[in-house]
Length: 120
Length: 115
Image: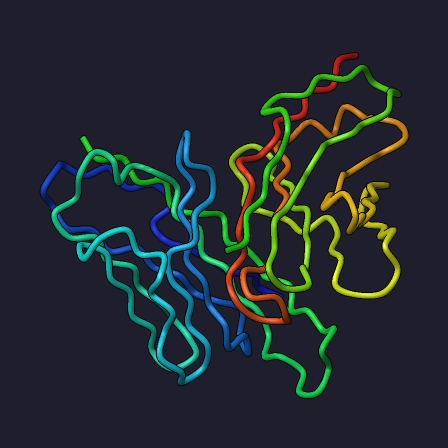
């Protein structure tokens, strides 16, 4: 079956412009995550959606970053007024619903190929 | 708060030699621990995971890792390196424990395999 897809694969933009990055999770996966991978910082969590619950935005680095998710499908990460330090690979991941009553169950996060963002 | 430390940003081994990638964690809850691999220009792929139960876990491609609570470690090993193992490896801990929630990653270790 299809994995997690992300678009565009590469995005070059000028400082100050807004960008939108898209993530299509695996069908049936209720959980969706955004991470950022940059030189020197490694992989950082940005935001987490789980079903209809309020998203966990605790990893967003500034109010220029926001994300939305339509139901349990597509998610869009928006960066407003981009800065050069926003240059990174943005990774999306999705996972299945948790299994009720199974403490030890873990739902693997499946990662997309990422969007490489370059801010000039 | 949970954290992960990977010792060595670059590790180089000869083909056929033992691979040992080190990972230490800090967690205020019983940890769920993971190793992911990232090949050039690709996304992350889960190698193996520890949740509960047996502390020696086996993953794909001949890799295994042992959870040692007393040492707060989860080192990744493979008895004999292959050229195709060259990649970047990330150790991670589940931030809140349990089956959901975001992962906290180490900074990664790039593995080179010499012929």
